[in-house]
Amino acid sequence: MLDKAEHPWKLVGPWYRNQSLGGYVANAPNKLAKNRHSAPIIQKYADANFVNTLVQEPQHSLRFNSEDFVHPFSHDPNQVITPIERAESNSPLKLFLDTHSRFYVVVCELHCDVAGFPRVERDKVCEAGFVVRRRVPIINPALKNKVSSLLAQRSQLQNDLNKINIDLKTARLKQPNSNTDIGGLLKSQSARIFSGLHTGNAESLTAKLSDTIAQLNQLTVNGDINIELQGWHASELKGVGSWQPVEETPEQVEEQVIPMYPLIADPTIKDHSAANKTLWFGVIPTSLADVDANNNPRFDDADLYEIRCFVRRHHSQFPIQKNKTDCCGDVIWSEATEGYQVAAHFDLDGTSHRPVNIKLPDLPAIRNQVNNAPAGRGANARIIAPPDSSLNFATDNMDMPEGGEPLTRAGQQICFFSILLFFIVAMFLFRLFLPILLFIFNLWFLLKLKFCIPPSFQFDAGLVADLSFDGSFGVDFDASIDAHVQLMADFSADLAVQMSIEGPDLEAKFSQPGFSITVNKGKENQKIYISAEQMEGDLSRMIANGINASDDMRNEMVNGGSGPGLNASLSLNEMAGIFIAMQTEYEDSQHPELEGQLNTPERGLVYFQKVEPAKEAA
Image (tube, rainbow, N blue to C red; front, side, top):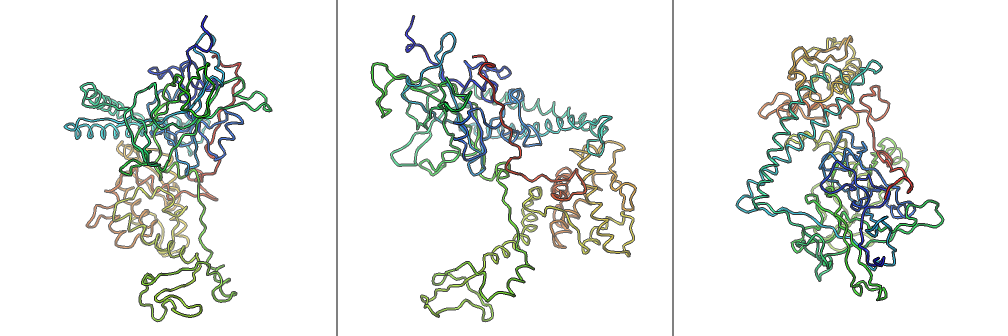
């Protein structure tokens, strides 16, 4: 019988997460793996104190949601994704940045690869760490344009197919029944129309995607595309390195190693998940200051990364040295973790994890304070302009003062301002240039981002004439202006509600005979939409006024003028999404269908439930 020290080792995922993301048998995505064949796992946290949480209870980590994948599974970013759903998709993980309030660790466990799969004593290991690698396609230069075209086509087809699948799934989930309020769900007729139209579209897109992937695979078989595995090698200059080709499991580790730390059970905690286990963990970097010789960052949001953990076996005949270079034992590699990409700095899901509250100055309150305070009170920003740097211009004897006591240097100017003045000016310029920016660069889709519009869609008396809807409101415009404004507001809210009820792809539904949408049914401002063009015209007017567009811009957006017009730049579905976003009320909403949900620190956070060792097979 071999001595236990001579047994082969296995570095695998931790015992408690056999069904976690990353815990699948290679080349068998639809079968859950046993611990003996699993890869180290990636655990997610939303608190900068995550290491203490991990040490206290390794199992207490966050479930992965739809937003945690490059290709979302659902319209709801907080929908928890099950292992089965994950196994049926090839979408890589998306790791958010530290600035997004998300943190990640990799966890692995060491066993002897013999009957019973016993643990290896920690003192048998003299080094533990992991490396981050990336897989990069090396393309034949003569076929670069063709490959780029195929890759772009594949990406677009994947996005289109993913959107249709999500919409179909949403439609199925919202099918009404006898015990359900039809007002808050999809109408059954509309759902059937949508499902029938898009099932065929999904099949067509799937066939095109399969053909595109087949062409790419053939180029790989022909050797025109080679996937190269690269590891990061540090240089003599601190913070500078390079990605270089590496082997999957080299005997010597030449790459830059990120250390792993032992997960030791706290003896004061009963049933600690690390008790009688040999676990290690390492903090996964998502943003580093490291760059290559061309100042390209080590990590970006375009490459696909993976992690391999390793331990180095200690030779029993030698004492363990503090310097790891003194340990010359064998290196035991784990399987690679699942692939992941790093989120972009301005990723919408990532930036939404840490909402920022900015309250505009209360001008009436500021006025009262100013009137009851001495001059200069509240001027808390001291602005020092070096010579010839004050950016002065003629202001009719209102230039910044020079000289005085204490004396300033020649040409230097010092002035005090209240910080709120800077903020007020910045906000004024933001509101002034927002519609211009959207108009010039055709960035209307940005209207769905809440930072660029008011939280509720409000009308004032000056907009009544502009929103006459060709007189179809059926109201006497010689009556009370306030009454008209309320009718307009009621109409816009009900229009958004009806579009929300109908669900996705209004264009497809309007193409069906007899389809219509009735707004404010039974009220004096009732209106029935029987065509997409009819609805596009009204939405163009309301969106234009909602962003305070000028008269000229409004005319361009609604009628086209010398430009394409809003309805030519956006589809009806996109315009509907923008309008619903502009209508969303966050507080005291009279329309539950349009009630917005502001992110809170705990929203969307679902933790794994703790499992006991007795319930898990080795």
